Image (cartoon, rainbow, N blue to C red; front, side):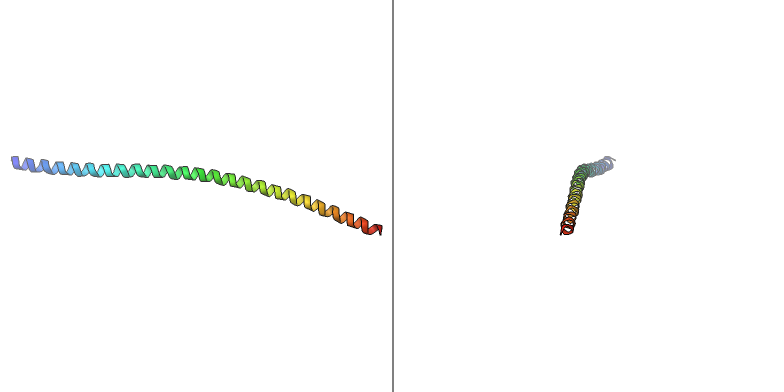
Length: 90
């Protein structure tokens, strides 16, 4: 009877040790995945901010170029008007 008890206690201890090892392994893996997930979320937030900043800069550049285009069109119109006026004087 004592032999059976010792045998089963040994098996139970082995199973508990195995279970504890698996639990530790899964806990470590879960922690690593949580950290990786946190880093990915932070990366997305930073990337989103960088994209927003880039979009704002591009919009400002488009606005600046549109203003330059309007100024150049006005200059062209003024030059044409000047040429027409000079041509009519001759």
